[in-house]
Image 1 (cartoon, rainbow, N blue to C red):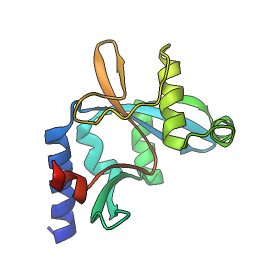
Image 2 (image 1 turned 90 degrees about the vertical axis):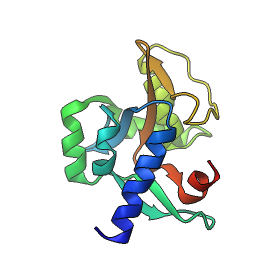
Image 3 (image 1 turned 30 degrees about the vertical axis):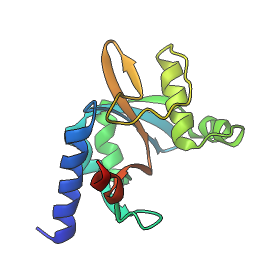
Image 4 (image 1 turned 180 degrees about the vertical axis):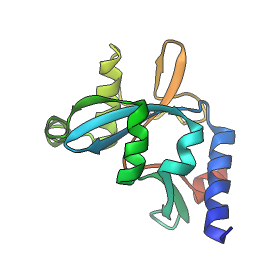
Length: 151
């Protein structure tokens, strides 16, 4: 195991030890559509990667699925909307891709979305049928070394 592989797995383990929920709704684009896939944290090593964090925060744990990883997620996914519609929503909003995806997922489940800053250690982004989920859209950062060192 290389040092970066060990660090990658260590960051996943540390994140999961702190996380309020281990259920995820992953968002990604594929062939002109935006999908949402429901899985648990066992998928993290397969759809995340270790990347350089910004502002001197060391390495970051990010959801950056490749096309083959997106194909694997499709077995647990459903279409949310077209990529064109999604991009229009982002372009006509002050929010970023991840926030718009979270808003659309929340509304898909008949709930009202409000932007919040609740830490991943205290709650999920949405609760559906009593289950809390973290919502992540492609290129999302879970955490970085600096945040984990602080906790």
